[in-house]
Image (tube, rainbow, N blue to C red; front, side, top):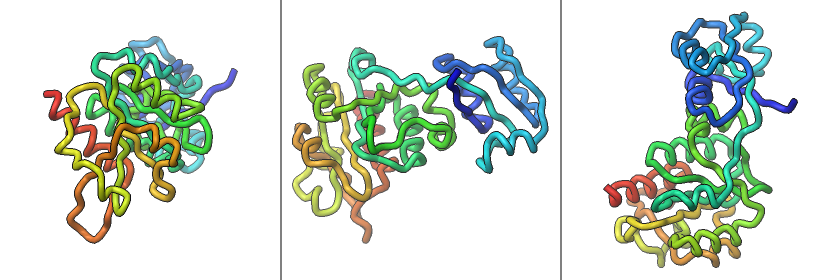
Length: 239
């Protein structure tokens, strides 16, 4: 039976709390009370074990003495995300760094976004590293994997969403500042990788471009920081 590991206190607690993913067993070398309480609430066994055993399982990761054996990550369908009221969506085009994906999921959860959409190929999926980087937010955030992002954008438009490509540097010269956009309705932000940006076909599927004005020497933000700025502005406008 195929499975995975979740490691770290917060990720394990959130995996238990969200009830979206199967949790088969928790191994604890520190006797954490919150982990024990959440596991008991779900009827999941907690096995006390040595820190060496945790180290062996987590292979050098920052595990804080706790790991959980879990089922595969429960990806959502795009329609499930779009069916939510007034959807607010992040679309990531070619983000390959798992820590960046984890940070985006954490920002999306904090801003109350409806979901995150990622490509099936040539991009990071939700791995144990992503779960840890998200501080467990991945276990709550609806995340869809799409074979064709351009087609996914068309489906979002059909659902009434406005699609904005996040652009920085020279590419963002003709973009609208994020504070000047009406983000109160259904919206999706498309963000590309730091190296390649948004692919041409995906960019052509957007309704317009949004920028975050910069005052320093560096012309753009990390993808996770940029997503947080855009999402929290949308949340502010929605009240």
